[in-house]
Length: 316
Image (tube, rainbow, N blue to C red; front, side):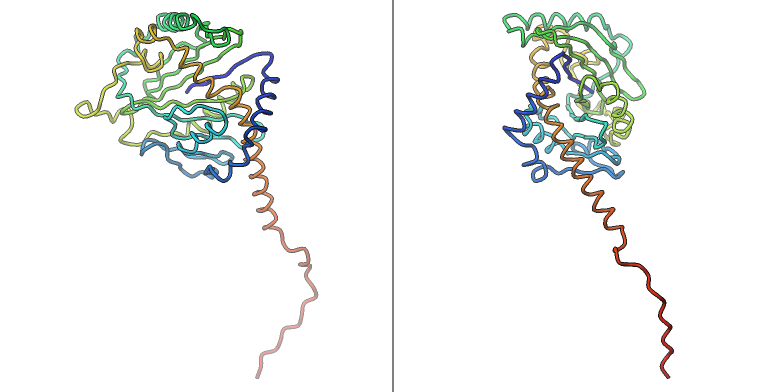
Protein backbone atom coordinates (compact mmCIF):
# COMPACT_ATOMS: atom_id res chain seq x y z
CA UNK A 1 0.00 0.00 0.00
CA UNK A 2 1.30 3.43 -0.93
CA UNK A 3 0.31 6.51 1.01
CA UNK A 4 1.36 9.73 -0.72
CA UNK A 5 0.62 12.79 1.43
CA UNK A 6 2.06 16.25 1.87
CA UNK A 7 2.48 18.14 5.13
CA UNK A 8 2.87 21.89 5.25
CA UNK A 9 1.71 24.94 7.17
CA UNK A 10 -0.29 26.03 4.16
CA UNK A 11 -2.22 22.74 3.85
CA UNK A 12 -5.56 24.36 4.81
CA UNK A 13 -5.13 27.28 2.44
CA UNK A 14 -4.11 25.03 -0.44
CA UNK A 15 -7.05 22.71 0.17
CA UNK A 16 -9.44 25.63 0.24
CA UNK A 17 -8.03 26.98 -3.03
CA UNK A 18 -8.06 23.58 -4.69
CA UNK A 19 -11.59 22.98 -3.49
CA UNK A 20 -12.75 26.27 -4.93
CA UNK A 21 -11.10 25.50 -8.25
CA UNK A 22 -12.51 21.99 -8.32
CA UNK A 23 -16.04 23.17 -7.62
CA UNK A 24 -15.97 26.12 -9.99
CA UNK A 25 -14.36 24.29 -12.90
CA UNK A 26 -15.96 20.87 -12.57
CA UNK A 27 -18.71 20.29 -9.98
CA UNK A 28 -18.47 16.69 -8.82
CA UNK A 29 -22.20 16.22 -8.28
CA UNK A 30 -22.92 16.86 -11.96
CA UNK A 31 -21.59 13.45 -12.91
CA UNK A 32 -21.11 11.44 -9.71
CA UNK A 33 -24.47 9.70 -9.74
CA UNK A 34 -24.94 9.40 -13.49
CA UNK A 35 -21.53 8.06 -14.57
CA UNK A 36 -20.22 6.08 -11.62
CA UNK A 37 -21.67 2.87 -10.24
CA UNK A 38 -21.37 3.28 -6.47
CA UNK A 39 -21.84 -0.07 -4.70
CA UNK A 40 -23.00 0.43 -1.12
CA UNK A 41 -21.73 -2.11 1.38
CA UNK A 42 -24.01 -4.52 3.20
CA UNK A 43 -21.59 -7.37 3.82
CA UNK A 44 -21.65 -8.57 0.21
CA UNK A 45 -18.59 -9.68 -1.75
CA UNK A 46 -17.30 -7.52 -4.61
CA UNK A 47 -14.86 -8.65 -7.29
CA UNK A 48 -11.53 -6.99 -8.11
CA UNK A 49 -9.56 -7.55 -11.28
CA UNK A 50 -10.01 -10.40 -13.74
CA UNK A 51 -10.89 -13.20 -11.31
CA UNK A 52 -7.98 -11.96 -9.17
CA UNK A 53 -9.32 -11.00 -5.76
CA UNK A 54 -12.46 -10.27 -3.78
CA UNK A 55 -13.46 -7.98 -0.95
CA UNK A 56 -16.20 -8.31 1.64
CA UNK A 57 -17.67 -4.81 1.57
CA UNK A 58 -18.84 -3.81 5.02
CA UNK A 59 -21.68 -1.47 5.91
CA UNK A 60 -20.80 2.24 5.80
CA UNK A 61 -18.41 1.72 2.86
CA UNK A 62 -18.91 2.13 -0.88
CA UNK A 63 -16.98 0.60 -3.76
CA UNK A 64 -16.04 1.53 -7.32
CA UNK A 65 -14.68 -1.06 -9.73
CA UNK A 66 -11.42 -0.54 -11.63
CA UNK A 67 -12.97 1.26 -14.58
CA UNK A 68 -15.00 3.63 -12.42
CA UNK A 69 -12.08 4.33 -10.07
CA UNK A 70 -10.03 5.46 -13.08
CA UNK A 71 -12.94 7.61 -14.29
CA UNK A 72 -13.27 9.14 -10.83
CA UNK A 73 -9.61 10.15 -10.79
CA UNK A 74 -9.76 11.67 -14.27
CA UNK A 75 -12.87 13.67 -13.42
CA UNK A 76 -11.25 15.04 -10.27
CA UNK A 77 -7.85 16.09 -11.60
CA UNK A 78 -5.97 12.85 -10.98
CA UNK A 79 -3.78 10.74 -13.25
CA UNK A 80 -4.78 7.04 -13.26
CA UNK A 81 -1.99 4.50 -13.55
CA UNK A 82 -4.15 2.25 -15.71
CA UNK A 83 -3.61 -0.59 -13.23
CA UNK A 84 -6.55 0.21 -10.94
CA UNK A 85 -8.81 -2.71 -10.00
CA UNK A 86 -11.06 -0.98 -7.46
CA UNK A 87 -11.49 1.72 -4.81
CA UNK A 88 -13.17 1.87 -1.39
CA UNK A 89 -14.60 4.98 0.31
CA UNK A 90 -15.86 5.25 3.92
CA UNK A 91 -19.22 6.92 4.59
CA UNK A 92 -18.88 7.69 8.30
CA UNK A 93 -18.59 11.35 9.25
CA UNK A 94 -15.27 10.90 11.08
CA UNK A 95 -13.52 9.01 8.25
CA UNK A 96 -12.21 10.89 5.22
CA UNK A 97 -9.91 8.75 3.10
CA UNK A 98 -10.01 6.51 0.05
CA UNK A 99 -8.19 3.28 -0.74
CA UNK A 100 -7.27 2.45 -4.35
CA UNK A 101 -6.30 -1.10 -5.32
CA UNK A 102 -3.92 -1.66 -8.25
CA UNK A 103 -2.48 -4.80 -9.82
CA UNK A 104 0.74 -5.34 -11.75
CA UNK A 105 1.34 -8.63 -13.57
CA UNK A 106 5.10 -8.34 -13.25
CA UNK A 107 5.71 -12.06 -13.11
CA UNK A 108 6.05 -14.14 -9.96
CA UNK A 109 8.33 -12.38 -7.47
CA UNK A 110 10.60 -14.82 -5.64
CA UNK A 111 11.06 -14.02 -1.95
CA UNK A 112 14.42 -15.79 -1.64
CA UNK A 113 16.06 -12.48 -0.65
CA UNK A 114 13.64 -11.97 2.27
CA UNK A 115 16.43 -12.32 4.83
CA UNK A 116 18.94 -10.32 2.80
CA UNK A 117 17.11 -7.00 2.30
CA UNK A 118 19.74 -4.31 2.85
CA UNK A 119 17.77 -1.28 4.07
CA UNK A 120 20.81 1.01 3.99
CA UNK A 121 21.67 0.08 0.40
CA UNK A 122 18.06 0.64 -0.68
CA UNK A 123 17.95 4.00 1.06
CA UNK A 124 21.18 5.09 -0.64
CA UNK A 125 19.74 4.02 -3.99
CA UNK A 126 16.68 6.17 -3.36
CA UNK A 127 18.84 9.15 -2.41
CA UNK A 128 21.27 8.82 -5.31
CA UNK A 129 18.50 8.37 -7.84
CA UNK A 130 16.49 11.36 -6.67
CA UNK A 131 19.53 13.60 -6.29
CA UNK A 132 20.53 12.89 -9.88
CA UNK A 133 17.01 13.51 -11.13
CA UNK A 134 16.83 16.82 -9.22
CA UNK A 135 19.55 18.40 -11.35
CA UNK A 136 18.16 21.16 -13.54
CA UNK A 137 14.71 20.92 -11.94
CA UNK A 138 12.96 23.90 -10.32
CA UNK A 139 12.77 23.70 -6.54
CA UNK A 140 9.05 22.93 -6.56
CA UNK A 141 9.70 19.77 -8.60
CA UNK A 142 12.61 18.48 -6.54
CA UNK A 143 12.35 15.59 -4.11
CA UNK A 144 14.70 14.60 -1.28
CA UNK A 145 14.75 11.35 0.69
CA UNK A 146 15.28 11.75 4.45
CA UNK A 147 15.22 8.19 5.75
CA UNK A 148 13.12 5.23 6.81
CA UNK A 149 10.20 5.64 9.15
CA UNK A 150 9.88 1.85 8.91
CA UNK A 151 12.48 -0.28 7.17
CA UNK A 152 11.24 -2.85 4.63
CA UNK A 153 9.69 -5.82 6.43
CA UNK A 154 8.47 -9.01 4.79
CA UNK A 155 5.65 -11.13 6.24
CA UNK A 156 6.36 -14.65 5.00
CA UNK A 157 2.93 -15.93 6.08
CA UNK A 158 0.96 -13.22 4.27
CA UNK A 159 3.53 -12.78 1.48
CA UNK A 160 3.36 -9.02 2.01
CA UNK A 161 6.09 -6.40 2.05
CA UNK A 162 5.71 -3.23 4.14
CA UNK A 163 7.83 -0.09 4.47
CA UNK A 164 7.55 3.64 5.14
CA UNK A 165 9.96 6.26 3.84
CA UNK A 166 10.22 9.94 4.75
CA UNK A 167 11.14 12.79 2.45
CA UNK A 168 10.57 16.43 1.57
CA UNK A 169 10.24 18.64 -1.50
CA UNK A 170 12.42 21.54 -2.52
CA UNK A 171 9.84 23.76 -0.82
CA UNK A 172 10.39 21.79 2.39
CA UNK A 173 6.99 20.12 2.29
CA UNK A 174 7.16 16.90 4.29
CA UNK A 175 6.28 13.66 2.51
CA UNK A 176 5.29 10.30 3.96
CA UNK A 177 5.33 7.24 1.70
CA UNK A 178 3.66 4.25 3.42
CA UNK A 179 3.67 1.03 1.41
CA UNK A 180 2.26 -2.48 1.40
CA UNK A 181 2.61 -4.93 -1.49
CA UNK A 182 0.69 -8.21 -1.55
CA UNK A 183 2.44 -10.82 -3.68
CA UNK A 184 0.37 -13.04 -5.96
CA UNK A 185 0.94 -15.95 -8.32
CA UNK A 186 1.80 -13.71 -11.28
CA UNK A 187 2.59 -10.30 -9.79
CA UNK A 188 1.54 -8.08 -6.91
CA UNK A 189 -1.35 -5.97 -5.61
CA UNK A 190 -0.74 -2.45 -4.28
CA UNK A 191 -3.19 -0.65 -2.03
CA UNK A 192 -2.96 3.15 -2.25
CA UNK A 193 -4.24 5.13 0.72
CA UNK A 194 -5.20 8.79 0.21
CA UNK A 195 -5.76 10.77 3.39
CA UNK A 196 -5.03 14.03 5.19
CA UNK A 197 -1.57 13.81 6.87
CA UNK A 198 -3.07 14.70 10.24
CA UNK A 199 -5.43 11.73 9.97
CA UNK A 200 -2.89 9.14 8.76
CA UNK A 201 -2.70 7.07 11.95
CA UNK A 202 -6.47 6.88 12.40
CA UNK A 203 -7.17 6.34 8.70
CA UNK A 204 -4.57 3.60 8.42
CA UNK A 205 -5.88 1.73 11.48
CA UNK A 206 -9.48 1.83 10.26
CA UNK A 207 -8.55 0.92 6.71
CA UNK A 208 -6.49 -2.08 7.81
CA UNK A 209 -9.22 -3.31 10.18
CA UNK A 210 -12.24 -2.83 7.91
CA UNK A 211 -10.86 -3.15 4.37
CA UNK A 212 -7.48 -4.86 4.08
CA UNK A 213 -8.52 -7.60 6.51
CA UNK A 214 -11.52 -8.32 4.25
CA UNK A 215 -9.42 -8.45 1.06
CA UNK A 216 -8.59 -11.92 -0.29
CA UNK A 217 -6.59 -13.18 -3.24
CA UNK A 218 -8.62 -15.91 -4.96
CA UNK A 219 -7.64 -19.56 -5.11
CA UNK A 220 -5.53 -20.11 -8.19
CA UNK A 221 -4.09 -16.59 -7.95
CA UNK A 222 -2.42 -16.88 -4.55
CA UNK A 223 1.34 -16.70 -4.13
CA UNK A 224 1.53 -20.40 -3.31
CA UNK A 225 -0.35 -21.27 -6.53
CA UNK A 226 2.72 -20.40 -8.62
CA UNK A 227 3.60 -23.04 -11.22
CA UNK A 228 7.29 -22.77 -12.18
CA UNK A 229 6.68 -24.85 -15.29
CA UNK A 230 4.13 -22.48 -16.84
CA UNK A 231 4.19 -19.11 -15.04
CA UNK A 232 6.40 -16.16 -15.91
CA UNK A 233 9.00 -15.16 -13.33
CA UNK A 234 9.75 -11.56 -12.41
CA UNK A 235 13.16 -10.14 -13.19
CA UNK A 236 13.35 -8.51 -9.74
CA UNK A 237 12.95 -9.66 -6.14
CA UNK A 238 11.77 -8.00 -2.94
CA UNK A 239 14.51 -5.36 -3.01
CA UNK A 240 13.51 -4.40 -6.54
CA UNK A 241 9.88 -4.19 -5.42
CA UNK A 242 10.85 -1.65 -2.76
CA UNK A 243 12.48 0.40 -5.51
CA UNK A 244 9.26 0.59 -7.46
CA UNK A 245 9.44 -2.56 -9.55
CA UNK A 246 12.91 -1.95 -10.97
CA UNK A 247 16.37 -3.26 -10.22
CA UNK A 248 18.64 -1.26 -7.93
CA UNK A 249 20.95 -0.29 -10.77
CA UNK A 250 18.05 0.91 -12.92
CA UNK A 251 16.59 2.90 -10.05
CA UNK A 252 19.95 4.58 -9.43
CA UNK A 253 20.30 5.46 -13.10
CA UNK A 254 16.78 6.68 -13.79
CA UNK A 255 15.77 7.87 -10.33
CA UNK A 256 12.34 7.70 -8.78
CA UNK A 257 11.63 11.42 -8.83
CA UNK A 258 9.46 11.42 -11.94
CA UNK A 259 7.49 8.42 -10.73
CA UNK A 260 6.92 9.81 -7.26
CA UNK A 261 6.04 13.31 -8.42
CA UNK A 262 3.67 11.77 -10.95
CA UNK A 263 1.97 9.97 -8.10
CA UNK A 264 1.70 13.22 -6.17
CA UNK A 265 -0.31 14.59 -9.09
CA UNK A 266 -2.56 11.59 -8.73
CA UNK A 267 -2.83 11.60 -4.95
CA UNK A 268 -2.14 15.23 -4.19
CA UNK A 269 -4.07 18.13 -2.79
CA UNK A 270 -6.55 18.41 -5.64
CA UNK A 271 -7.67 14.80 -5.20
CA UNK A 272 -7.95 15.16 -1.41
CA UNK A 273 -10.00 18.34 -1.86
CA UNK A 274 -12.21 16.72 -4.47
CA UNK A 275 -12.84 13.84 -2.09
CA UNK A 276 -14.63 16.23 0.24
CA UNK A 277 -17.28 16.57 -2.46
CA UNK A 278 -17.48 12.79 -2.77
CA UNK A 279 -18.06 12.32 0.95
CA UNK A 280 -20.67 15.08 0.97
CA UNK A 281 -22.46 13.42 -1.93
CA UNK A 282 -22.30 9.90 -0.46
CA UNK A 283 -23.36 10.95 3.03
CA UNK A 284 -26.18 13.06 1.69
CA UNK A 285 -27.36 10.07 -0.31
CA UNK A 286 -27.10 7.81 2.74
CA UNK A 287 -29.06 10.21 4.96
CA UNK A 288 -31.78 10.44 2.31
CA UNK A 289 -31.98 6.64 2.11
CA UNK A 290 -32.08 6.30 5.90
CA UNK A 291 -34.82 8.94 6.14
CA UNK A 292 -36.91 7.19 3.48
CA UNK A 293 -36.49 3.85 5.26
CA UNK A 294 -37.49 5.35 8.60
CA UNK A 295 -40.52 7.05 7.05
CA UNK A 296 -41.68 3.83 5.39
CA UNK A 297 -41.60 2.06 8.75
CA UNK A 298 -43.77 4.65 10.52
CA UNK A 299 -47.50 3.85 10.82
CA UNK A 300 -49.97 6.27 9.17
CA UNK A 301 -50.79 9.27 11.35
CA UNK A 302 -54.55 8.49 11.67
CA UNK A 303 -54.32 4.90 12.86
CA UNK A 304 -55.81 5.56 16.31
CA UNK A 305 -57.96 2.52 17.05
CA UNK A 306 -61.72 3.22 17.41
CA UNK A 307 -64.32 1.38 19.48
CA UNK A 308 -64.73 -2.25 18.64
CA UNK A 309 -67.72 -3.13 16.46
CA UNK A 310 -69.84 -6.10 17.49
CA UNK A 311 -69.22 -9.17 15.45
CA UNK A 312 -71.75 -9.79 12.66
CA UNK A 313 -73.71 -12.96 13.38
CA UNK A 314 -73.45 -15.58 10.70
CA UNK A 315 -76.25 -15.66 8.12
CA UNK A 316 -78.78 -18.44 8.46
